[in-house]
Length: 281
Length: 295
Image 1: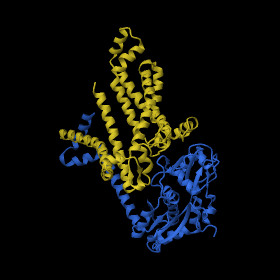
Image 2: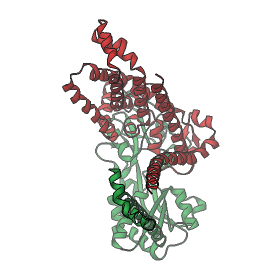
Image 3: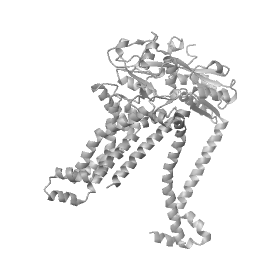
Image 4: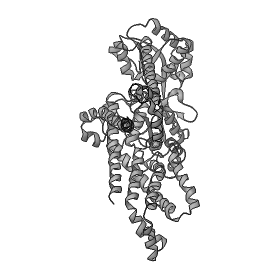
């Protein structure tokens, strides 16, 4: 009897654990069932590298959106990563306990702000500022990059800080014993040792930036052409789905699911790469 | 903890009572509750489904859909027990649904084609389309051709149109939107909207952007024009309700209800409500133009 009960409870937990996993499987299967027909009809190459997106005339090419996603994410990384890394070094090495106990929750709070609030703030402050001081319509890659840079800060900071803090104490003590200053220790010992964790933090941050939709829809302008400068509007893969799903039907809807497939593959690739980097010590 | 629990339950654990014991242990009970709720929800949903079958189905244009929903809501308050199901799908789909009888009424925000003229139809309202710019922009009047050239990026600077030298920021609606569809049909002719145009997903967002950006141009439903933006004159005709009604302002489209044959019974009752003074007033309040206005 007792063994039975153990078995049953084990099975029950397995089932519940599997149910979480099966949601992932279901979503993936659903997206593929909905999206694959249009890819096979248009052709994978024409879909991914097609330059024209005009669903009402049957043109489904998402290359401008891929360029949009890449440029906005790259911009966010350029703006956000240095700040995030410096912040995590400050929290892990320089900040007195009292200060880091104040800063750390504040940064976590950044992650708790809904993305629509970021978008709204961007629309009211960042976009007009760009329009007035730099020109162009304001809705631009630059605006999207600034918003996303702020949004990926908490992800990168907390993971990078943890990987700095989890280094063995001997590293630091050994460096000090050799007469290195605090900055020399950080630069030549701690940062190289925590490299894999920091790289993983950056990749996860980038994954978050690529997947973000709501805030980006509001500040990016959503034009379906390859942007020529950072002041041009652009459309990302996520916003393509977000902005057009309302009225899409038939092939148009399938094409949006197919956009989701491409997005899913990119994000999965990034996550796999992050896992690979952290495991390779 | 786990030992304590298992000994506590032990007495119940002879084979015959096992099921009952399981039923009353906490996690199981929660599962039963969940199952019950699920079954209840599913049966409720299917009940709704079967209720719809006895009601009226109205399908078609996504431009008319929000207005039809307002009307249906009011109608269902006035007639408890009546069920009106409003569905989207686009004008063509709505006309086809009416033709085949899968919906009682079809909604079309475009004029019927010749081969569709055999259907029974009635105009429930008209919607004007306004081309809007920032109030700070000195341009007052454009020709339809100029608007078309702006949207196909043949004209890219306000100085080409008598304005100050500045790049035109073209704003359009997303693909699939009824307003965009109407704009393309009424203005663009054979040319396409430039892919460089900024895309916003609502009338409100377009209006907000034009209100903020002195170099922007956009198009929205005439009923939604307010003092934050300036509606352009087209070919010298001001975008006003009067000019839409007397036919001198070209950018307008009819909102039609279409049916296989002249409606009877429940469908006719709903239609009568839509065309009644009360229903028409609701549409006017929502910013549309009543075809009976001024007569």
